[in-house]
Amino acid sequence: MFGYRVPAPDEAMLISGGRRGLGGAPFRVVTGHGKFVVPFFRKTRFLSLAMCESEVTETCVTKQGISLHVRAVIAFKVGNDHESIINAGQRFLSDQEQMSVLTGRIFAGHLRAIIGSMTVEEIVTERQKLAAEVLDTSKVEMAKIGLIVDSLQIQSIDDGDTGYIAAMSAPHKAAIQRQAQIAQAQATQAAVEAEQEAARKQAEYARQTAVVKAEYSAEVDRAQAQASQAGPLAQAHAQQEVLDAQTELAQRQAQLRQQQLVAEVVKPAEAEAERVRILAAAEAQRMKIQAEAAASYDRVALDRMLIDQLPQIVKEAAGGLAGANVNVLNGADGLGEIAAGLVSQGLTILDSVRQNLNGQEPAERRTEETKSNSLLQLRSGKDQRSDDGPVDVD
Image (cartoon, rainbow, N blue to C red; front, side, top):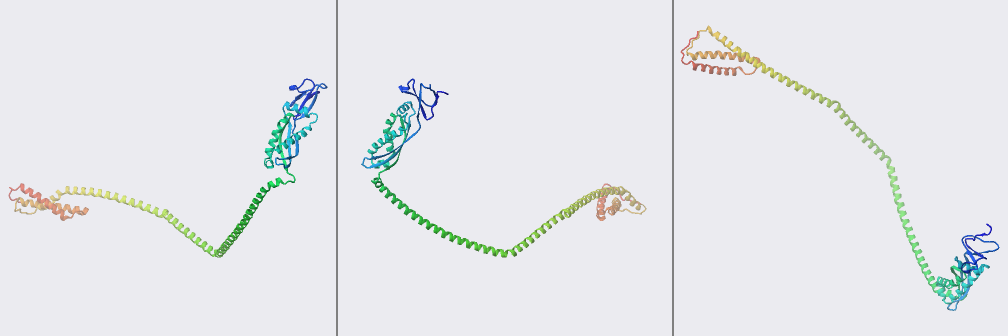
């Protein structure tokens, strides 16, 4: 827009004309934003706020009277506050290059003054202290002209041909050389020891290699010897394994056949024999029971039948005596004896029939028992008829 001006980020816009600036300054300061400036009635100038550099090369005399050539670099700029911009603008706005020249001169003077109060040893060994003192002494003076120093670096210090710095460093150089020689000797000794260790390791490696080679050769020879015998041995082992396998197979087949025979022949035969034995035992038991029952029944029936026929048998025997002329001399006793004889004959006949039928007790024993029983009965009857006289039986 016509009349609207904007300063760069590293610039300060100075507007002169019209009303005065802050603190009675002859111009107004604008930074960081634009401003509408009335043409012809206002004038605008720009002051750089960027970093500037100034080199200082100065010959200074130390406290010991030794001349030193000192080279330093100063980094500075215009301060960001309005007061510093106003101070710098009033001094350098028309010729801003003069800031580097003036700064170099200011620092050269302070550098000579500071070095003049120090020894060479202090200057050489304490460069940071030298720079800090120069900055401190120049800070107030630089602020008056609106400048601030960011850094001061002492780049080099040289005593020319006097050789003071070299002489000062000679003991250190000697010590360094001595340390270097010692380090070199130690390095050489270490190198020798390393070479010896390497040679020892190499010899050990060669020895171990020879041992390994010998062992390997022996192993190869042994393997070749085994390989030369491996054929027959392998064949014999193979045949033995085949025979073992065939033997084991035959044993397994025999066991299997035995198990099959047991399952197919022995077990069924044993089962059948057990069945026949059980059936035969049951049949024999049945027949025995039946025979015992039949024998018991027949014996009872036979005894009953014989007992029923005993009176008839005695009667028939007595009938045989009916026509006989028998004299009984002893009365009742004689008659009892005759009756007992008849009964005894009947029992003998009964026992003979029973013996012929079932073959049990012998006739003599049964006869004796029968006689004994008959005599007992007759004697009993005799006792009852003791008063009777002789009896004649016709």
